Amino acid sequence: MNPVPVQFLFDFGSPNAYLSHKLIPEIEARSAARFEYVPVLLGGLFKLANNRSPGETNAEIPNKRTYELLELQRFVQKHGLTGFRRNPFFPVNTLQIMRAAVAAQKLGCFDRYVEVVFSSMWEQEKKMDDPEVVLAQLRAAELDADALMALSQASEVKAQLMASTQEAHARGAFGSPTFFVGAEMFFGKDRLREVEEEVMAVHGRQ
Image (tube, rainbow, N blue to C red; front, side, top):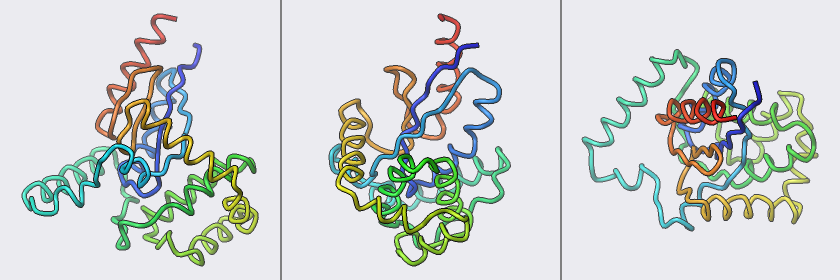
């Protein structure tokens, strides 16, 4: 079975990206999908796409806010994601931790870094735009926090994150999580079934 590549465009600041992340191993285990994690800066993507967060767009629609929370609770319960917590510091500025994600790719610790930061944000309720908190979380996970933070400030790392964000917009993305199976785009955790169906279709044509 030849793997079918799926790009997962994510920002740690998105709870729906976290929830998607938790389901990806199950999808890979039962299908030909192989997910490639692509760090993008959600704030930058919002600006490029002239988009705003649901917190802003739903601010004056209390019934919609209530429903969105209900839908989130249903999703968590359906998939047994009992570790999920709503971060009390949300929304957070993710610029530093997204740059460090690119740095982690270069340092060969990307998978572990992603797991630690998603957990810190959406399970441990940490304030992940506080540099001292970020350092403490990375060190507790036995990652080289100093090297990650130092490399995250390198011009090539900053440029790579911005380029990935601009490319995402050019391909049609406007938020996170966004998935690409070839040229086909899917947005949101609720489209994971469609992502898997497209993977099956692509695999059937191979």
